[in-house]
Image (tube, rainbow, N blue to C red; front, top):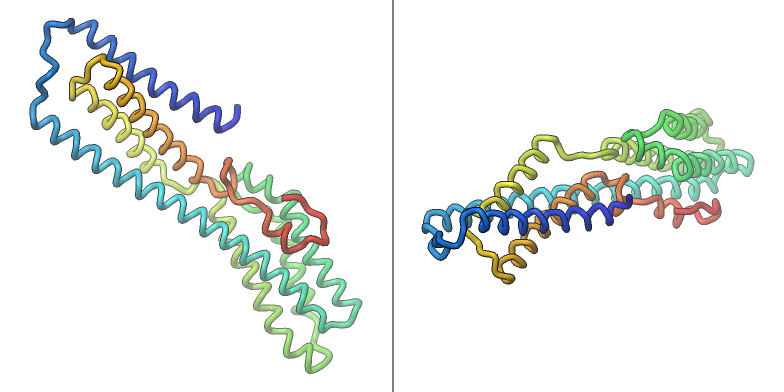
Length: 256
């Protein structure tokens, strides 16, 4: 089942539950009960609950969106640093230059073809990817510069490798869901309370009120789905992809 189909089912279910509860409630209480008057205190409490829950939803959505943006930036920084390593290797003799570029290409190919799926399934980066990046660092670090130009390029190349390593570690920390379980408990509990307060307002079975109640509950379900989808920057339908590596290393013929 796709995530979007699951979303459609969840929204439809939320609408159906609210409408069904309203209809059954009115059948049970009958038509003699006056539903036109709702105590002012209930109106006030309902309004405050809605405002507080809207703030919580907004903060949660902003948090997961910011985490996704940070994950995208880390990926670009990793790919950009490796591309610069490959470009700066031009100062070396052909044999060592090809070795450095082969190390970079091997790492990038592994990340795109193997590690990305591993990271999405296991919520962490792989040891093999770390070994490939370490090999690049060791190859550059253990070769003494043979000319002034190589001496000037040595430290910038090592800095770019360190930047790629730092971005890789950040990518590993952002892999998997990032929102604590207690936050999800608050979001779900708040959704139940917020939607439940509709019944405290004694809504009737008129088409207008049923449509509004159904749309409100569907909106809550949609917002919760968005938070859930953004919560895992690399593993869901709107996740960060490997397209940055594909764009910066076109010679490898990779697919994003």
